[in-house]
Amino acid sequence: MPNSLELWLIRHGETAWSLSGQHSGRHDLPLTPHGEDEARQTAHALRGVAFDLVFCSTLQRARRTCEIAGFLDQATLDPSLQEWDYGDCTGYTRAQLAERFPNWSIWDGPVPNGESIEAVAARAREVIARLRARSGRIALFAHGHFLRIFATQFLGIPPQHGRHLALHTASVSILGFDDGYPAIQAWNRK
Picture (cartoon, rainbow, N blue to C red):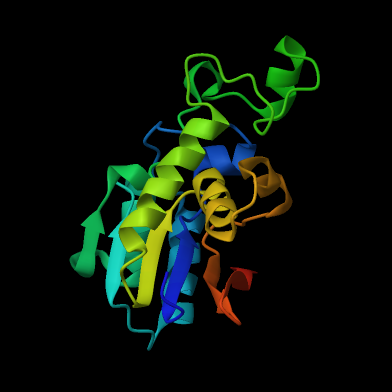
């Protein structure tokens, strides 16, 4: 990847399920009023930033965040940026899932009838491969778990390490290069 490539990862604003801790996955939830306020704060944080390309998940919470931030007209909607498909885990909290599967975590599974962590990582690598020949500043409006796994794949570390990369709603993170190596330049900024 060219050293002049900067990837700005923008997580969508709050939804009812991000607030409650339920795994939303592909369930197409709108932003809460607070989530819309968060998106306006993100718009303020991105004021004056020019992107060479903008990509956005097709799910409405990411699209609305992108719209409020002022970049939807420039964005290419990309289903590859959708959140992890949680299958039968959709709508449940970690505590509820731990009742069914002792010591359960999304990072270790199981995720019945959903995507494996390896499948999400492969999807992230496919997006990264499309960006390899690019240079400049590229925005990705997407989802918490997907972006955390995306970051691990950019850095070349196992996807399970995404558990160590907390990502708040409507946060902005930047991936790029340091001395030729893939690096986190900023993480989880509001």
